[in-house]
Image 1 (tube, rainbow, N blue to C red):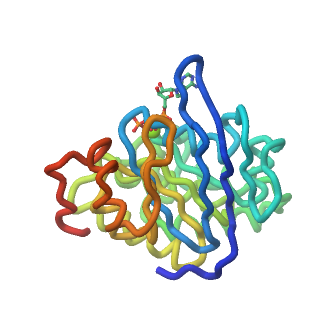
Image 2: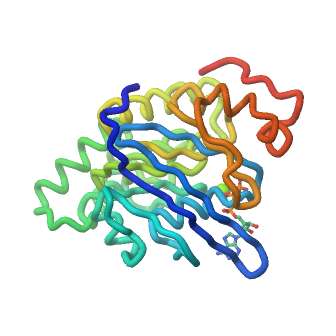
Length: 252
Ligand SMILES: Nc1ncnc2c1ncn2[C@@H]1O[C@H](COP(=O)(O)OP(=O)(O)OP(=O)(O)O)[C@@H](O)[C@H]1O
Ligand SMILES: [Mg+2]
């Protein structure tokens, strides 16, 4: 794990978002450094997935600003943000089930915004498949993959966009204890190679074994951000999310 510079890659400033009466972001402000891995925790319905949607442009802000490399993203659509280097995975992976792993990833590398020729798009797809350890399933229809490999495919599809920042939404959810370390190693390797990671996860021991900093949000508010062990010891984080009997437990 290394943070490559002190440069802010992404800045989230005083953002506001509500769905009807539900306030999902209420003045959240934080920065993410280039090369950093930031973890996000918080109770169900806290606004975590919505925060990723606001960053990648699937949802628009009511107020505030999100900027990337000191440039506002507010007026950009998801494809334009993807083109700038922002890619995400989804809480519920939705690959094209009848298409092979290679074809699924090729969709990512072909439609990443930059105009790539077929050869280059294919090279990037092959590299993304190799970095996520999916080589043996190259020609397997995505619908036939087990959960771990569907998660790897989510990562490979996002990687095929050659992102500078990768937004992960509960990518480890549902994995067995023996599968989890495989996914963690892939995420660590991506981060070490320079990809900035913002990762929502309820499997806290897995998350804190990878991230440099941890953030807790609840009710659309930022409750704490900082070193993982400090955030996990924060009394409001314990009250609102972890519960008083929480122990980090074995680090994968
Ligand atoms: N498009 C939408 N329209 C209306 N309400 C929404 C929409 N998206 C999310 N919400 C609501 O906003 C709140 C925050 O949802 P969000 O998915 O961001 O939570 P979360 O922190 O990711 O929760 P979980 O841990 O369960 O995934 C919830 O009450 C949810 O029902
Ligand atoms: Mg969510």
